Length: 241
Image (cartoon, rainbow, N blue to C red; front, side, top):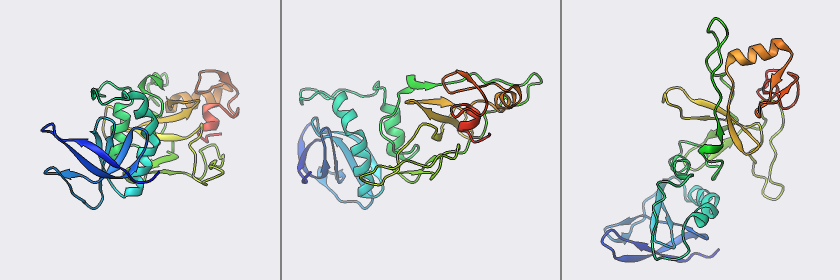
């Protein structure tokens, strides 16, 4: 889409027209505003909800990555924001608010609005009888941050399946079985989750995986009981069998 200007709201109630480096349905990418003027700053870009002129966040990184992130989130912001400038609603209670901020800052891979917190399935930590193995299995992440607004995909999943790619662009696609590390209650201990049928599911504990490998019956991310070497068993998805 050709570059256009966007009308931005200033703190004093005035507005300013700024050249947009990219503009979508709801979001636009432009240079920062300082002292009421558009001021170019290398590696700093602002993503704005252009209907209301309210800033959605500041991105630090290359312009191409800022635009890529805005593209991923454009439809979600369009659905969340009214189509008129009558009011600029607060998105503090938006289901994707924290996910947006983490991807904007580079704390999480830039994958767009995935499942909300309600679609993250947590698992009860199960330990062996003697209490051993209560820690979460340290699964190998196949999706990792590669700088603000970027994500690095492993060539293969933990189960050995090769990464699928967009047939038109060649870009890597996220898949069922992808694993990513999320921030947990302890900032030094990540929470490993596996993507399965649109939801992120907590990886089981070491004790659970050991029990399943010995019992001859394992679980899938949906809780179904299958043979340990079934393609959708946790043991297979994590590359243990």
